[in-house]
Structures are given as structure tokens and as C-alpha cells.
Amino acid sequence: MTDEFEALRPMLLGLAYRMLGSMWDAEDVVQEAYVRWLRTDRAEVREPRAFLATVVSRLALNQLRSARVTRESYPGSWLPEPVATDTAGPLDTAELRDTLSYATLHLMERLTPPERAVFVLRDAFEMPYEQIAEVVGASAATCRQTHRRALGHLAAARKRGRPSREEHERLLTRFLDAAAGGDLAALKDLLSADVTAWSDGGGKVRAALRPIVGFDKVAAFVLGLTRRHEISWTRIVDANGRPAVRLASGDREQLVLADIHDGRIHALYTVLSPDKLQRVG
Image 1 (cartoon, rainbow, N blue to C red):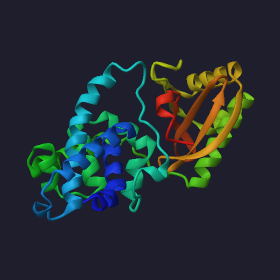
Image 2 (image 1 turned 90 degrees about the vertical axis):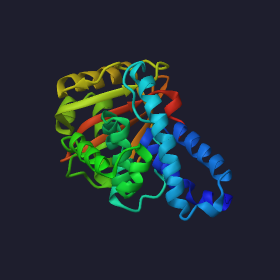
Image 3 (image 1 turned 120 degrees about the horizontal axis):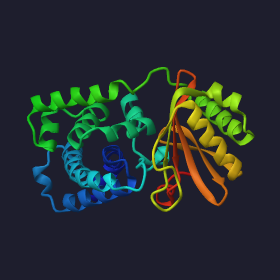
Image 4 (image 1 turned 30 degrees about the horizontal axis):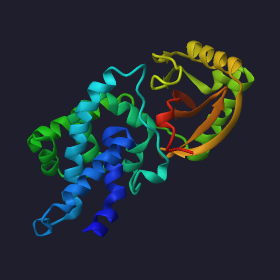
């Protein structure tokens, strides 16, 4: 039974992580599923993958409902915990890759827990509506409606024209060079007019408490930071399926991720919370 579970663990972790946005919580959920698996009469399980995916999904949904309350009182913006790409399970389909992306995970925070569960289970893991209904405690017809509603919430913000990995890394590196050099003209070529910057210090590291919106404000914020805190080193890392930059500025380490499409950076995510920097780089 243990070998069977361990073979499925990467998939189950990827499922729980997409639903929760936290690998810490995902690992707890998967471990609880393992305990339940050991107590299960194997003769009653026809398909271990479907059975365990249902168990993990139910546990994650319960965890997500309680986590929403905690995140509402979070000091500043709550950002998902970034992870090294190879720790988040298989990426065999475009949907699995898309739902792992940091921008998509951040967008999923807009969804209610049932919407998020239905979206992840249907889009990323292609679970039948009848099985999803068992997870969320609703009819298959209701789950279809919930899925359409979730897609509607995400459609306006999920962009096309995303760059290759090489182009993504090149634009992100150019952005850092422009910021470090105080090059406002270069930043104007890289940032969209409606760019938004989020920072997450977790209450442990000083960070902007609210999103900063618009090129002028974001550029001023970035240039102000680099003037006060010189970047001492940078390293390209692979996070959530895309290149990101791990760096040290002053006495702080941070991870900078970006949502890039149509040749410009439309969102910047800076994770400074030490608790959320342990799984990348």
C-alpha cells in the first residue's frame, strides 16, 4: 500500500498545492491522506488514483475554507508560496502547466473555495463532474455551472501571447538591470501602462502593504528601492514553471516573479517572507 501511495504522491502534492497555494499546507493534506489510506480496506478501492485524488481534494477544500479566514487578516498582500517547478508534480499537459503558473495561482485567490476546487479538478486534472460533485458536495450540474463561473472570473485576466522561457528570462533580467541602473526609459519599454506590483513580507519583513498600480507609481517604487538597497547578487531559478529571480537587496533576500505577455511585464510579485522562500533556489 505504501509503494502505491508513494507512486501517486507527486500528483497528489501538485493537486493540493494548486488548490491551496501553499506547499506547507499541501504536504500536511497529503500526509493526512496517507494516514487515511493506511486505514482503508484496499478491497473496497477500485481505482487508487481516483480514490486518493478525491480524499486529497476534500481535505484541501476544508483547509482552503479555513485558510481564507486567516488570509483576510494577513499583514499586507497574501501571495502564494512559490515552489521549484520539479516539486509540484507532473506537468504533462498545458492545463497542468498553466494552473501551476504563479500568475494563475494568484488569480485563483479571487475564486471562492468551491470555485477554485472545481476549476483545478476539472481544468488541471480532468476529473469528471460526477466525481467533482462528491468532493464539493453538490450535483454534477451545479459543478458545471460553478466551473463556468470560475472561468468567467479568470477569463479577463488570463492572457495569451505568453513568451517562451528564454524570452521570459530575458525580459525579467532586463527589468532588473534597468532597476539597478536607475534607467527609467528602459523600464518604460518593459512595463505595461497598467502594471501592478504586489509584495508579501508576511509581517516579518517590511513590504508594501497594498498593490501598487500603474507604470509611474511602480517605476518610482522600484527605483526608490534600488537606490536605498543595492542589489548584491542575483540568481535565475525555476519557479512555478517559469524563470524567476532570487536576489539579495540590502540585508533581505527575495524572489521576484513576473506575469509577462505581449512583450511587457503586466504584474510583478515580490516574495520577501522568509517562510515562503524555502522551496525555491
